[in-house]
Structures are given as structure tokens and as C-alpha cells.
Image (cartoon, rainbow, N blue to C red; front, side, top):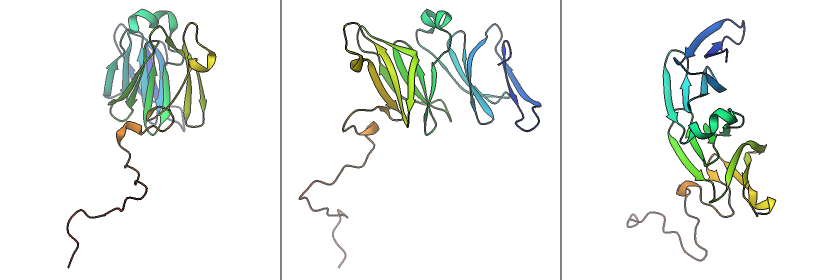
Length: 179
């Protein structure tokens, strides 16, 4: 980030490779991603660019209300496996970095707000503060990873293969056996 411009530089010699700017807007925070950059802009737009093309862009809901006073501290959080969490006070949204596809969202509980700057990485998990009045501190932490909220016994995105049932014979091929 240099003023109102996002720029990419050669890692070996430091020579400029590309520049990207949006007229009338300034970058708030930039997350390097290989030869590209994911940028949060002052108007709440999120872009992924290599300087020549914008690969994808997404608008953050309600950004005008909190972004000017908050800045970008803690808003962009890599979760692993090509997933980026965008943390705002009202929700966490996870996007696939390759194409900006929305993977999941997690709204803050009623009367609570996520604190984008109040997060801690612990292994593959991101521990996120969710300020709630009259709630014990243990109830104000949310654990996330690339598949969403970490809870006991979860089936991530409903895409895991079902576990075999005890005492149930797996027929394997549901068609008749060969003769």
C-alpha cells in the first residue's frame, strides 16, 4: 500500500511489477496472496487483483457504519485451504480466495458484536471475540476454521461421508452381485 495505490513488487529485486488504484478511494488493509493482493477499500469494497485485472470483488454489508472509525485492523483473516474470513461487527463471511465465492456466513448473536481486532490464531483455529453484555468470557469466544464454526460433532458443510452404523452391514454396491 502506498497512499491510494496497491502495488506488487518483484521479490528478488524489489522492482515494481504492477499497480492498482480506485478513483476516489483508498486501501485500508492489504493481504498479499502470491502474485496478487486482496484489498479492503475505505468504502467497504473487497478486491482481489494482480494489478492488471480484478479477479473478483465483494461489497461488505454495513461497512459505512463502522469502517471509517475502525479501520481495517483484524478484518481480513486467512483461515487456510484458500479461505479468507472477513470479520465485521455483525457477521463473519468466508470467501474462497481463488474466485471470491461465498462459502459460509456466521452472524453475531443477538445483542452481541464481533471484535475484528480481538482475534487470536491457535493452530488451524481462529479464536474470535464476540462481545456480549452479561455473558461470561467463555461465552464470548467463537472458534472458526475454513469450514465455519468449530463445534463438537459438527459435520462441516454437510459434505462429509456418513459414518458406518454399528451392526449394519455395508452392502457396498447396491446393484446385484456379479454371477
